[in-house]
Length: 100
Image 1 (cartoon, rainbow, N blue to C red):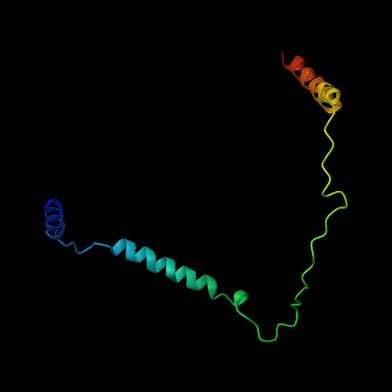
Image 2: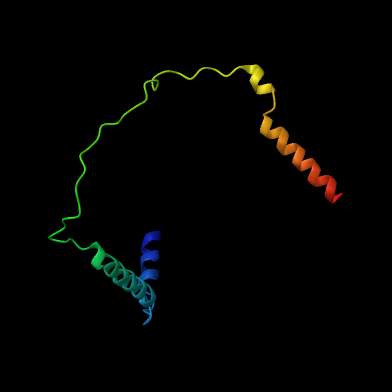
């Protein structure tokens, strides 16, 4: 019974003269822009397209060690700071000293 009232309320809604005009214009503009894009001369097929050469399909080539697992990194190497990081820290400290 509740759905009957909802349907009646929906059917009693007054019709507007401007209902859907903006959306229709947007959709029409989008269709026009889409047609304009796909009908460009650059996208059209050429009958005498002699410049195009289809390449044959190439099989994938893998390195010889592709299936091998990478060795685990040594723990000692992780604890030692990188030489580039030391240089960066030195320059950062010099810059801070100049501005302080």
